[in-house]
Image (cartoon, rainbow, N blue to C red; front, side):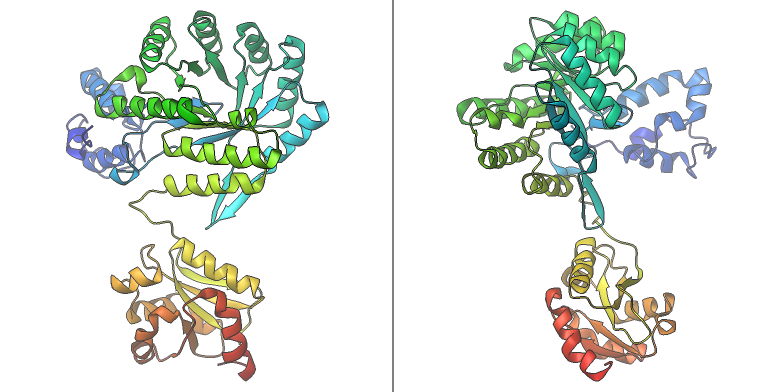
Length: 466
């Protein structure tokens, strides 16, 4: 699929530069539409005047991504992707991780799992990584028990939920209880699809369609869409290992290619993977969690937009959250922190001042190492446009004049009673130029930030200051 250009979008806008959308010009608004920073609805003129009806309809069609965006609950977006590979543009909606709860668990176990799911948060390079939802499975085939569990989850968590059973009567019980939560319904098959489609329509909920054959999946989706259901998610089945797993992943890839490269709309839907199948072949919790994490990673790397999981082990989930963070970081914009003067610990006027770049991984690594070493210090973060030290130096984004500019802008001399800064070891060649331009003394720190505490101890504290 060719990338949409701002000019293509601009031709379908009023072109009157009224600024009602918040952009200065219609061309600027066109660019923001492509980047999803604005919505078509923000152009009120387009919707208020009948003469723009044809343009409006064409614009909506043009901007609709080949993979339909589906909303679960009151705001969890899945799908909505435009490209096969991240480097072509970016991926917009990170893979949603749902942890399962089954109705054969005890009330105490359910409450504990809900509590842990709600609280699961990890901070990495300034971003909060967390789980996205709860999948409630019916294993007892008991409508009453399933309803009790749905109620318990709804009362104790505000997270998006999925209701899982192939029995439409049981799903309807859960929908009646979670009526205001717009849960994901799992799952329609060739045998039950009409009843599930009716539920999805009546309760306005997204629906998972389960079919392992890709051609039959296409036919089934078209039948369900003709029935009036538009928010559909595909599940080609997941297996823990072997040829069935390879076939399922091949179907996921083929579906995504057909939708994006060929514009085949029946398969242009988010895809669900079920990593909990790892527990069918491994009884040992450690081995099962390890296999599940590996399986989930494979699914995520092959276009899974939602993954059901069972483990709550941090060591098994953290790699997935890290992988997801890396995949769904916009390659055009490095993760970065705001430039400025940051205090680590409780620095005073005689504390050292460290200089680094605003690439998030660099800053948080330095800050973490300084904090772990119990060093009270200031960190002067330079605006290197999100580049780490070495590429910033190579690209002339880390310069002596930039250091001078930031020393003055953030009034470092008002925070400390000395005029000494510590620059990264990789920036050693700039030390003389920085001293000449800024009038500050420069110490060349270690290349590895983990050695900063020892460097401060030996080069700073022994002398009271530098």
